[in-house]
Length: 179
Image 1: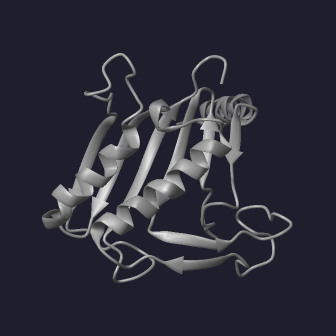
Image 2 (image 1 turned 180 degrees about the vertical axis):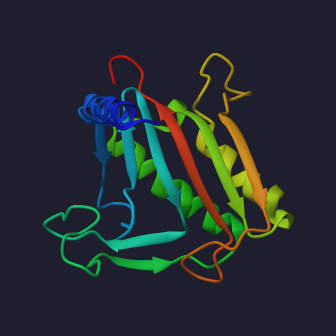
């Protein structure tokens, strides 16, 4: 590639990045655990991406609320690792996701894709039972058959944060008109 072609390529790349920058919004809440290395969620246009959530519970959100990730490292948020059954861990992860979605004025009915990481696929049945309850109100025209998002599930994964963690879930949601 010539210097001229490279310069044009770089200018076009910078222009594209600048045009996207005004469409990106950080989604943050003190009701869900903060990470020091990534955002809880990001909105790009009508898509909301919720970062992988682990079974960590916020005991008492900071008062006054701090930005997430907090500017003063290390994080001052008081959290507890939920290391019980896969059902308990799934419910905590889903509560964290619910809080982040709420910060974007969304709920589980707006979720179109979920990616699930399980330490072992032996936990899939119990996980699935707990997970599905969070979508019960979706698809009001057929409440017996809630609308569930597309999903990928991966087993045999070491979940970060605590060797007793059994699950991590990330989701993508779509912001409907009027929300």
